[in-house]
Image (cartoon, rainbow, N blue to C red; front, top):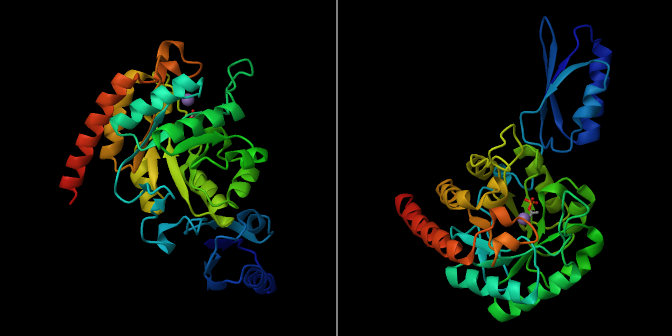
Length: 339
Ligand code: PEP
Ligand code: MN
């Protein structure tokens, strides 16, 4: 971190400020006194240094971070890829391609069991399905809640597929006991109290990127979970809000290699919420594999036209068969050329 001091800074003020920084943050401060201005270089772990506090000091002209504000999620401090292994044996981030597929919302026992069997047969490695739904309108279907969780657990029993489902409140954590991966949706990416509570449990967390969040903010949210002791975080790019209206969101595929450069955490892509259109899911799934994603999350519904949520972006099981076939074929070729 570099701090530029104001031109008229007295020597006494500089000494006091330097001592305060060193004591407050347990770092070393190097000083360069120039003709025009004085510059301080903070050496050591600056993740805890509060930029606002520094900016608030009278003698400070400007502050610039030269190191990322996150540590546990930072590849610099953890060069190897994080591989998340589930008690059921599935691995995420080990070079394989995980596919989480299933309906936006769990709607009934027949629906979830049927979709689970079909996506499993096509090669999906996880069953997704929402029980608690974050809907823009309070009048839209809000999910089957605890009954939805029970139905997911039932489908897990029938198919053996581990389940991924969204949590909306830390008050519900106990209800998610039998869930294999807990999803934090885009709207809750910066629900810091929820993230802190999820940091205390020993279960993988799928952290979706917020609707209008930068990559740094997204990784900082992963850092919240990791700071609490839970290192099992999977990041999911699901499109961000831009000026474009042709698609529901804009899929930021460059986020995949960017995040992988900055962090050691696995990154997956959700082309369903990113595009909002079922006909775009195949091409964007293939593009995500080519971008180096560790997996995909795809919405699949038995009858998209009558889905209680996100029907327009949901694939039929037959369409999913085709997407999965192409995605695995591309993954094989990808591994071959990257050997
Ligand atoms: C979902 O996965 O159904 C969902 C609501 O996703 P997002 O948080 O990305 O909108
Ligand atoms: Mn959805």
